[in-house]
Image (cartoon, rainbow, N blue to C red; front, side, top):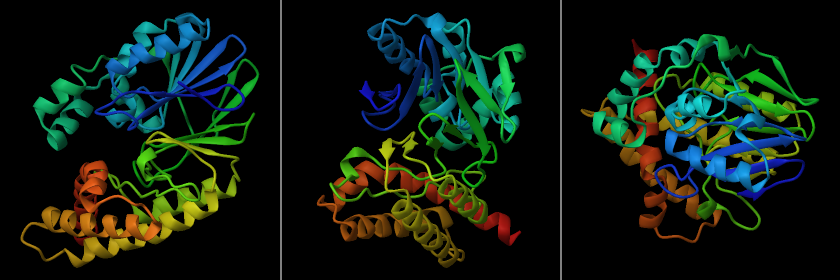
Length: 311
């Protein structure tokens, strides 16, 4: 558990590997809000952290999801069962999938395969509709006097919110403000890259959402993948440039016999160049070991976007 200022804690969900997915805990007095749920096995780390802070499961009042991709929401059913006083706060377009996760589960199986889903997530548990809060844009959650504000931020997914913490002006950004891993952080700069997971990537909407985050002038942004960043302007500019590059790579690959494979190959070469030009002193092989799966998934999302705009 890593402690930031003003009652914000980062918990490593140990999802797939260490330092890949975070669950954030916001503590205000004797009340707790969680941001994200990773997958069900991550629950034990939250329970351990609560115990370390002398808090009980009953202290958890809200579980906020930035969106319903399963590396963020896969543990929601298990978490809600463990925290009897909690309400689940989720984007309006994600509510029905939390009540009945069968369609969501089928979609993830289509992308990752049944074996992966069974191993990493198991059977997704439905959540009673009476325990779900529909997080329309601007919804404010009161955590023991601390205001947590949900803002609609499409571009990565149509069911994506950021969470603005009024006490610190910090933002929990889910996947809309990019991805960084601790191995890709330098003393003077972090190497953040966009994530274009299928099926809702929209470069125009992603750029608008990045602009919204900038306009809110956060003190810090807390990425689900992975940790706090503070150089908001630099990261926003890097993301804008890289989104344009991603789009160009996708368009260049439009005529390939296997579009996904072509985009993947180009993205892998691109991300290694970018990491090295940023000053990351890792071999090409090590960079791809860290981000290769991201590039494969990004390629799938770019291919879906390319097909959509060309149909």
